[in-house]
Amino acid sequence: MEQDLYAEEFDLEQMEAETEAMLALNYLDRNNSTFRRTPGGFVSLDTEDKHYARVQVFRTFPFTGKNLYISIREADEKAREIGIIHDLDQDVDEETRQMLTEQMELRYFTPIIKKVKNVKEEYGFAYFDVVTDHGPCRFAIHMSGNAVVHLTDTRLLITDLDENRFEIPDTRKLSNKELKKIGLFL
Image (cartoon, rainbow, N blue to C red; front, top):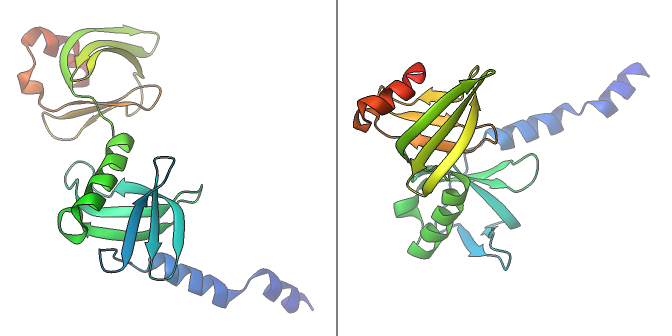
């Protein structure tokens, strides 16, 4: 009796099938998938066996391979991966490439910091006053934690309290005065 109850709660075959499906690498390209814009400005996907009314587009390597291994995922809380586009420049047509690139640019919007006007530390926070490639901006970060990440020796990624990202592509291009202001983070 106890084994029957356990078997009902735990279907090993179903679990193995789900695990195998999750681990399978499914490549998407112009031959097996069709992406379309939705009226709401999102992207839908039709594959050989399923229609997805809305999908999400992720860069697997957002800093080193912007158009390689693009992950297409379901647009729900689980965000299960539907498949991978190996090379966005070669595996899909130009219209699809533009559409998916637009989606990723929205997701990975990262203004470039051109000038550091001021950085003020207070009560465990750092308050930045900067000029970006999209205009002037002020934001705050936690002093503790991983708000400033060194992507290389000279490239910084800064994440503010609201999870917005800012980038300094090359700290060597900052003036000595600006370097002093961000010296704590170098």
